[in-house]
Image (cartoon, rainbow, N blue to C red):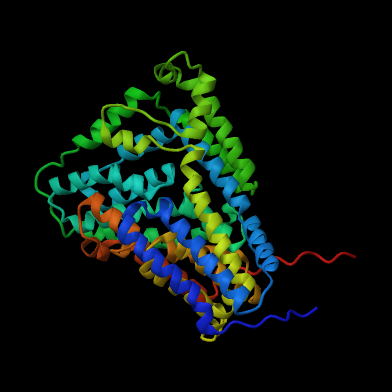
Length: 483
C-alpha cells in the first residue's frame, strides 16, 4: 500500500537541521566544554520534536509511524552502545591491572631529544591507543612534551601539532575510543572491520606526518639539554605504583590476535575485560591491597572499577588525570548522545527529510569519488557549524548510508570516511569543543598549531585520493545463492 502523506520540500527538510545547529551553537557558547554532557543531547531531542511536529502537522504523517521508525533507528545502535559499556569496564580494568600504565611507561621510554617532534608524535600515538582518548593524552603527556619542547627552544606550534597528530591517530585507531565505536555504528558495520579498513588511509597519513615532523626537526636547533623531569617523574611514579613488565602485553596481544582472526568485537572485548581483572589479581597485589579500604575485598574493588572507573591519588596531578578514568558510568554520556542522535535521525528518516537532504546533495555526486568527497566535506562543515565531532559523524552517517548502499559499497567505506574527516578535523576549528579544549590545555592558539597538524589535514586528503582512484573501495559482500 502506497503512503498517502506529503513529500517534504527542501526548505522544510532543512528546518530541523537549522534548529539543531542554532541550539548546538548556543550550547557551546553557554556551556562550553560541558555541552556534550547533556545540553547537546537535549538539543537533539528538541530537534527531533520539531521534526515530528512538522511531519505530523504539515506532512500529515501518523505519529505511530514516526515512533516505530525512531525505535527501529535506536535498535540499530544498540550493539555500539553495549560495546561502549564493555569498553568502559575494559579501560578501568586494564588500568588497575597495569596494562595501560605499561603501555604509557614503555611509550615514554622511547623519547629521544635528538628527534623530538617525530618522537613526540609517536609517544602520543602509543598513549592514545592505550587510553582511547586524545583529550587525556594531550592533557597529561602532551603537557610534559610541551615543557620539553620549550626547553629545546622548539616553537610551540610544531610541538602542539606533533602532539595532536599522534593523539588523534591513536584515538582514531583505538577500539577503546568512543568515536571509533560511533562511526561504524552510524554506517552499519562492526568495530574491528572498521579499524582494519582505516589502516589504508590512516597508515599513509601518519607515516607522511612523521616524515614531515622528522624533516621539520632539522629546522629547529635546540640549545641545551631537554628538561625531561616531567616525563621522568611520570615514569618513576608508574614504576612505583604498578608492577610493570612486558608480560602485561599478553592481554592486548590476545585481543589483537582475536581481531586478526576476525572475532566479533563484543566477545573479543569481553574476553579482554575479563583477562584484565585476572591480571590485576595475579600481578597487582600490592596496588589492590593499597586501594582496598574499609574492609573492601578485591572482588568489590574490581567490580567498582569496572562500573565506576579507576581512581588514584599518586601525588602527581598529571598522572592522576591520565589514569583516573574508565568504567561503564563514564560512557553513559556517549550512550545517551547516540540514543538521542538516533532518535533525531529516526524522525528525519520517517518524515523523508533525510532522504530529501541527501538527494539534494547527491545531485552533485557522479561517482564513488565524489560521494566520498561529499561525505568528507559534510563532516568538515558540520565540525565548523555544529561545533561537535560526534554530530559531524552522526549526521553525515545517517544522510549518506543509503547512497553507499545504492553504489554497492561496503558500509566500512562510509565509516572510514566519517572518521577521516569528522573525527580528525574537529580539533582544527577554534570554536569546536575539541579546538577549544586543545587550545586551552596546550596553551596555544588553534590557528598557531593548525598548520602543523599534519596527520589531521592529510587524513581527508588521503581518503579522497583513494576514493577517486577506487583503491580499497570494497563492495558489499553478495550472499551466495541457495541451490
